Image 1 (cartoon, rainbow, N blue to C red):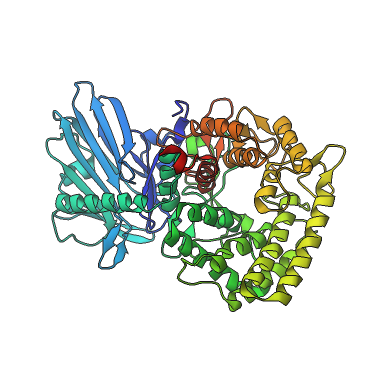
Image 2 (image 1 turned 45 degrees about the vertical axis):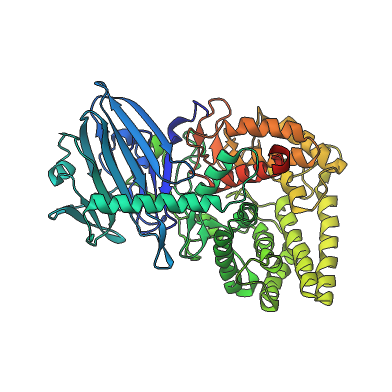
Length: 599
């Protein structure tokens, strides 16, 4: 993998209840409890130098460390880090969040387990356990028990139970590691067995869970390792209690250095829903897909008058007030740090198509426990009514411009998709009159969009109706079904994207100035859109070559963030980015050879 992965060379562990990010040296630098959008107890990631953060970190330091190696266990979310000192002594850190079947249910407590064990010699170790509160503004007071340390987080009473010296844990006193130690971080409850026994049992059961989950996936013949890691990461970005899939697990990692493009992505964007459902369906991850569909449908059916906002909290909450946190300097000192997201109040008309397209799965997938019915169809029709009315209305668009509105082509195309899919659902349900109604609307909307988006002088489908700009969302128009990928208008648009938005193998979302100036980094998923468009246009061999080079852009653990610097290759933006991992899955499934060709 790329040697230029940069500072976002982080591992993610999780159990679909909580997550944590761990740096290459085994430092836990990000983690919120008891859910991903809570106040982070570990927030060192948003310090100027998270390697030396005085607060918001759980580090296991090896004195005179000269080497660090890190990898996931095969087909698992269990992470192993091996540290070696100057004398050749070494230790292994095993990190995971427990997840396994127990008593007929999935056990997924808000816990992180860390196990350290000597491999060679007796390396000298120093522990730094320094949770924070109020987004890094306060130290957390630690109270020592007989074999545990308890504390109060803003949203959870916590405890670490361990067989290590509490003095070593509380005072960061160095010691020689001569036997395995376990740290069970979670709610303030006692364990019924010694922590090292408990941790060992949980480790074996968690590893077995992930192995079995991966075995259930439908993976392509080619690029299996990349797809499996993307699938596990996508699963880790889910909040299973509600079925929500988060856009990313972090907040305020800038899209490019000192750009101010710092946003909180610990929420669910409806725009992503169709593409996430599509990826989960292609993987055969039916239970995860069904949980996400339940989350989406709950939001849609509760929307007053069928009016939707662009994003919702992971519990489905509509209120996500945006504020700036002054207590954290930001990733590498590049603030501001934002909590919440003001995009909830924007008008983004693509959401109607996204919801209807995602919910369509319920009417055609016989595997689902709760198939779509007439009542759900009628509720979705409210979305279609909104979509038809909003086709020509300006909005903030898919890129969420804060300073202007236009009639974005992608938003209009998604409005068309809502009506088109309603026609298909009506046909599936045998509702001929409703099918004819939605089909007539969709045909009229398609004609209007293609007429007004096509710019004959520039020979491209523009980013806005009656406009002349260009952005990467036009690459999705064949994917939505609005236009055939072999249509000369789309082929000309593809040529324009290559001339104006491509830099190497990366595609910029647009090149014009926005609220924050010119974009400096490529939006990762746009490059996967480009690969899919090439394949659909008949340039399959070229698409495979570019896709394989894009896979080299992943960090050494196989993960991707939101943005990539086209010059240095460094990853930027919130991490890990669900949309980016979905891009890996979609391209691999489209471009892989069949199993019959391989076996």
